[in-house]
Length: 205
Image (cartoon, rainbow, N blue to C red; front, side, top):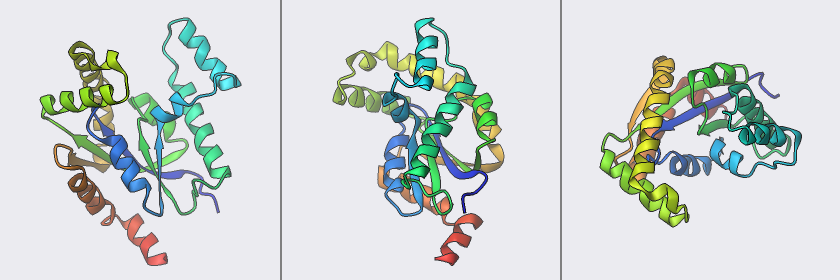
């Protein structure tokens, strides 16, 4: 039976902290489903009605309303559930790139139950810059590899997510993202397997 709200873990962290990497690693484990909002945006079909809504804001140079972003997210998740890629009765969502603000978080709560926020913290700014630069060059996004662009992205992240981190203060786990990816995965799993929801599911299998 499909639950009224999808259960989810959220990965939050600065660009280059490894959110996508951890989502992909954990998403390969049964009972988890990784969803990257960034990937969903990049693969958007702008010929669809909802795609045209995004285009209209972009053409006017306006920010996309949070309501539209959440509506697109829900449409994407529901489509995956219908195709049985995501099985909401047994899978837990691993969200990467959403929500990006407290307002988005509040709108999202109509559709998902956030079990835990994993804050991937990487206080070593130089390490983050190195990671972002390498990724930008690897993906051929040369404009994103400049120091000015990287510093601006980091400032934007810090300013926009400070309140969001506090919003989930009652279910927040700080993870040291300066470590090797396998150690980060180990620390995240350590939190997950201790949660009562996971223990109940494990007992049912």
